[in-house]
Amino acid sequence: MDMVNIKINGIDLSVPQNYTILQAAREAGINIPTLCYLKDINEIGACRMCLVEVKGAKGLVTACVYPVNEGMEVYTNTAKVRKARKTVLELTLSNHDRKCLTCVRNQNCELQKLCDDLGVKDIAFEGEISHHEIDNLSPSIVRDNNKCVLCRRCVAVCKKVQTVGAIDAQGRGFTTKIGSTFGMPLSATDCVNCGQCIVACPVGALYEKDSVKDVWAALADDSKHVVVQTAPAVRAALGEEFGMPIGSRVTGKMATALKYLGFDKVFDTDFGADVTIMEEGTELINRIKEGGKLPLITSCSPGWVKFCEHNFPDFLENLSSAKSPHEMFGAILKSYYAEKTGIDPKDIYVVSVMPCTAKKFEAQRDELTNGGYADVDAVLTTRELAKMIKEAGLEFDKLPDSVFDNPFGDAATGAAVIFGATGGVMEAALRTVSEVLTGKELEKVEFSDVRGTEGIKEATVQIGDMDVKVAVAHGLGNARELLEKVRAGEADYQFIEIMGCSGGCVTGGGQPIVSSKTMCEVDLKAARAKALYDEDESLPIRKSHENPFVKTLYDEYMGEPCGHKAHELLHTHYVARERIQK
Image 1 (tube, rainbow, N blue to C red):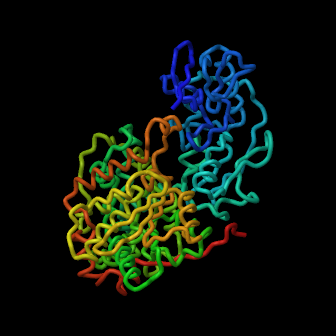
Image 2: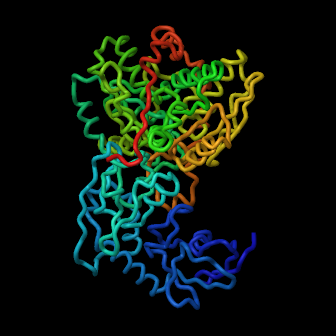
Image 3: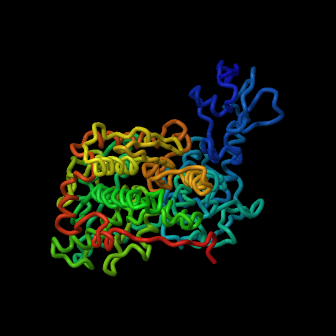
């Protein structure tokens, strides 16, 4: 790549010619503040926080969009620059709800940090402040425009990455706000509840619907047998909420924390993932052998499922009828587990700790019930679990490791663990499907072709004498691109995995929020996924069909995968939805 020579604050640098000033400065260890900037997603120079001086330019320029050129001289820390940035920040604050101590993003807010970094103590522009009604009708996401700084990061990720476009900027000047179509609440739009807008937001304008109070109430209710299950991706990110490095694996500490919080039983959703592979894998085998509807598309991601219902209703028959792992586990807990322990299902309160805000919507679906009871009663995000741990006064990093409880406890497989990374469900399924179809043990359990963070991955996997064409997509924009090719007859697969969030569950909408600067410096998808692949490699059992507790479940209760009992408890259906609900 061609390089250019520039100076930043008198420092000589040689950088690629396609760099912006912001990229060049950060590579040199010089931090230029930003607010609206989100790498590769929202590079629009709207907030003006990144203003710098360029020798010869008529005025200050925005570093995030201004390209470097040969001989450029840049100054990032002049009195003029500091004054401009401070003025921009004070103007932003002048129309902002500044109740920071009670804000959900207190101490993890990019606006708050800018105020600290730039020494803003007073605001010179006191005046009229906009007042907005809080939209809390969604089961997953709360919108508070009183906190909004109009950075448009949420809009960009919803429109460009997810291709949903449920929100956009409306109005002009002082009346500008981020809103939904026709001013409707999110719950009435084709929002898929993925929560990617939340993790993109630099402030407290977007956050998950709170379930913490409900869970504390259930734990205090002596008539309830409260059980908790945790998704694979949670263990790869929870530690970040307590200052641990990104990608730290905290499985044992997490189990201990949940026991200390007072849950009657602490289970691992990995067990549900192993059962999902038994059902979904069998479904794939049956469709291949019997000429069923292909490609079979995974249904573990509720954001993707709702996206399909809105945008690709013609593919609903392709969706696996298998419930997602935590919903399967919830159904098992209120049937098999209830009978085994002699506890009335109405007294079992199931809490799922998920990396995903869309799981809150999923848990309320009418289709996901068992004997008149919801499979799952409450969903906590990773962030909400961290709040509970902090409320309880637990020093997470000092907790001892422990294991999950029986009868589903310590035999979850590596195949289940990797569900949290893009390609993980596909790989887990192939490990089982391959051995079931061929009757031979795999020499190598890793299917490397479906790993990695490329938006769409394709592979042909040889199973016995049969070539199975598979594809993996993560992020709904990639899902749209893939399915439009299938719809047009330009691609042909037998099996497709789709995850609603880029990177899969490890970067779900309920995971710890990091700053846009950290997103530039660390590959969150890869770092968190590595924690899961490392755990997979460390486990003695790495194939779902070899889980002894899964075998016992089918021997004692379910019969066979995709049999009558299994269909009754572990499978569901989906519905076509209007693009905009009236």
